[in-house]
Image (cartoon, rainbow, N blue to C red; front, top):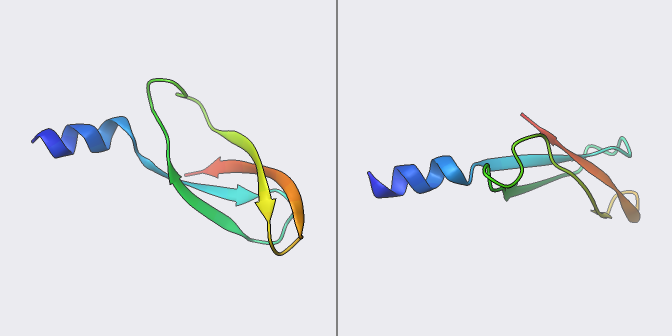
Length: 57
């Protein structure tokens, strides 16, 4: 049961590019530190520039 509890605290999320390229990153986040949707600037290799990525569910 210990592994199940750790999975609940750090769920796997998908980050979708706002540039409209359809590129996605898959990562984990801490539910305790960031309870709402994550927005972060990362590199989009399709657009070849840094754009904002938003968490999708």
